[in-house]
Image (cartoon, rainbow, N blue to C red; front, side, top):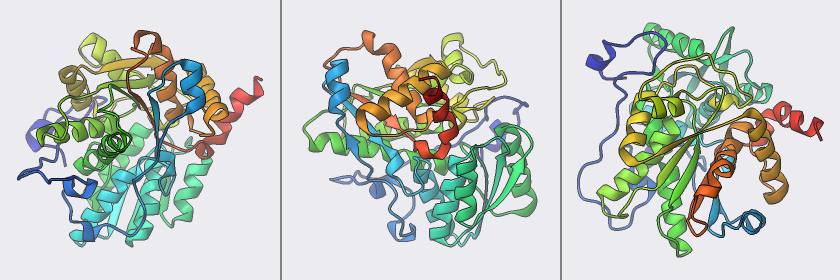
Amino acid sequence: MCCPQCSAKQKPNEPLHGVLEVLLEGSPPEIFSAFDLLPVERQFFPKIPVGNTPLWEPENLRRRLQFLNLFIKDDTANPTGSLKDRASFLVAAFARKHGIKDVALASTGNAASSMAGVGAAAGLNVLIFIPKTAPRAKRVQSLQYGAKVILVDGTYDKAFDLSLEYSRTHGGFNRNTAFNPLTIEGKKTVGLEIVQQLGLIGKECPDNIFIPTGDGVILSGVYKAFLDLKKFHFIERIPTIFAVQAEGSSAIARALTDGSFDIHPSHTIADSISVDAPRNGFLALKQLQTNGGKGVQVSDDEILEAQKELSSSTGLFAEPAAAAAFAGFLSVKDSLDKQSINVLLITGNGLKDIESAQKKLEDL
């Protein structure tokens, strides 16, 4: 689903060339909703409550850190426990509109359980390629929802390639991150909601948003939200977006500093943002460069410490990849204006990977 001409220069072990974006045309609605700014009509979406997740005002963290405009966007409240439901929701709607019954994808776990759950509500057949090393809870979720799961002896990158090969051979719809432009478009709804929710409590557009980043698709989705809102004159500026990456999987943050991609094998406790070659790397890097975004690298130990602090001070249990957003904020907070409006994007529930959470508890 990438641009055919751009894909012709694709090389192994690098981000995808020619990632497509959905362009919105026509006059802007007077009052926007997420459905107004999506490319599939509302009636095709399955009846499962994706989105409209809470925007928390964490009083204990605000007081301790002295950031009184710190917010948490809690996407663990989605039906399968992660932000990935937003992409699966739009993919499922598109499939239903066009009479497609079979969907295949690769995942480290969250996209798998998400597509399986949303696909169950939509009446789709879902086939998942997932590394054997993926957290067991995520595999169990996918199987409970009725998906067929193929365990891959290798990395997410290998699972990605195998799923594309399957789709080329057997047909159907491939949901793979970045490869399918609807994954970016679906994830933009989290950015739309942040603006709506801040408006309801009298705040402006956020100054900074901290996003856990692996492939870079959530990051591109959030950028797409703000670019669409600016295009239609709902906002006047784009927030500073921080791409927070684990040190062991930091290709985008490194490229933002170096100007080009140098792909290394990934290794991090944060499985949901662990990728060798970030499939949406080129687009994500371009958006960061064009809009003044920043990259932050955090260690696994910083991620686990942030996970524990977030849980014990707010009552929100985030998986390691999601807690990386808070770890990134902590690493740069001294350079931020304490009056600035900061949003932490918490992308997945901690119950999806309790083995990782236990590692920090065992140190106490």
